[in-house]
Length: 229
Image 1 (spheres, rainbow, N blue to C red):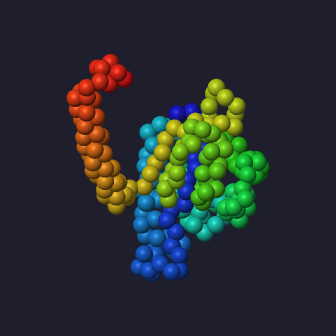
Image 2: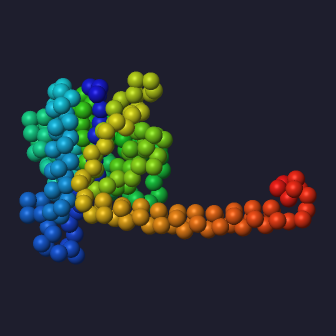
Image 3: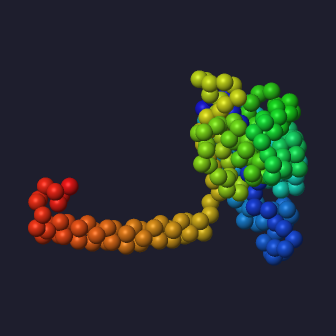
């Protein structure tokens, strides 16, 4: 892994006032227990990855000046331990308040990123914890078509490494760290089974149709060449 990279992270699952109180994280009240645990899990994996690749120097973790991003960033800083330098740092120009969900344009994202760059550490090894869809817009702005179909899971981390063969703005998506979700596996297996059942029914129908057509063609009294055509 190169020495210059940026990590984008969607904040962990948020807790809202209409949710059951028992789902609320006591240490991080704006996150759910599941969200805080998932953020810790992903951050530990990321920290181990940095240790295995012998990341030089430290890592600065930024939030976008919202409660959910701040608490998620605190979890990341805690799990990174001595690798994290600086206590709190925000890039509010990437927040939902400054990048509204509707009426956004690529020029607006580009301008917001240019403002953020003025506050980011000079050595490009940092984490930015933000919201969706803002992080998706920023990801597409930085990595272009290579991440065209990527969608974010809460608490998911993507590392973008600087490209050596293109303009400095663009970065290649290299690693994704996703939270563990046993329920997602069950749901995914259910969807796969449903698609396989549909494929079986469609295959049976097509086989019957081809067999019927071939039989009808073979038994007709017209000339063979004309029939097969």
